[in-house]
Length: 450
Image 1: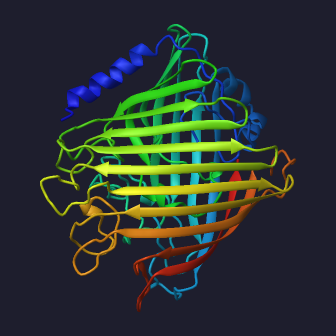
Image 2: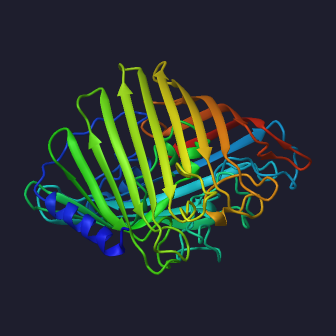
Image 3: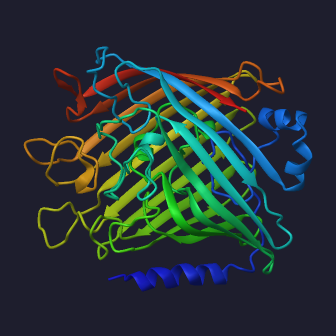
């Protein structure tokens, strides 16, 4: 059995062993997963230009401080749902719900960011302030605003969960971390604080995703983690990240005896066309249980075929030792969740990019409870008092439209219409009157970076 001290020793050993590694080269693709980096900053944006006109540009630049943000708003229509306040939210979630036929203000984010120098000892920081319907869904424990923590059971997030979200628009601080560049060997950067998780191809940040709606994989993973994460590289092709965190969506209050987990990533960029990531997480995550461990393996592949065509793929395997207790003979033998998502992107011109996503999602749990209750730890659908195996297939097609790609003020504007079809082997899609095995949704959002 792995104990907590072993987790700590693994992380510390990895950080010390890598302190002399050189920085790896990176290749940016439009459908690449976002990788947490300590020196990731946006180019000067309209907000900084406005601050410059009132004389703030020099002190901000001298302090290496960048202030920018974005706003996302959208609407999703489900062909099976009626209108009015009694409509059932769309699954999967937790994002882009149809809440009574509302136009959703998903998020307004202001980011304060100070970059660090990479050739000397330096300290930087990043703080995100968020308001909107997304903020109401990503509260971490002990950091909850509006009087509640959305994930206080520390379970894998439930794509089928139907929660009462009051008010719909809330405030949150999804990121608040310090970055330290250490001139040890060829450099080592540490992130200390609360940051977006490494796990997952898609992120909470809408600017880095191909679609308004999210994959089922995204909905089964944490949103944020709090701890220390080291970033370093072996050579021009290989890089690593390793650290310890308080757990999935845990910040100021833990619910299993202050247990910690290991979070890491191995990346390989053999050339300008290919990139490989292996994200992983190991540790006790279930509320009230620090003995049984959850293991997550999340491989990600991207392929830049040419200047216009790109592909991406993500796999997911989650095994939870709490739910799959080997002493219980009826527990599933090969894991709780496995999934595969395929992405494609074709840039038609500077104004329009076509995107596609295919996904197969499998989950198993035999916990008991009501529909949408994630307290048993794994998303699933209750049938006759038990949660059977759930297999869901999803197809999403859409466009990313940038109407003014060359305008210095409006180049950050994009519109993303989409059509999505989900099919399940079980009747998991609820309406006010019945349950169905499939659903067709039409959605679109507008994202503006400022």
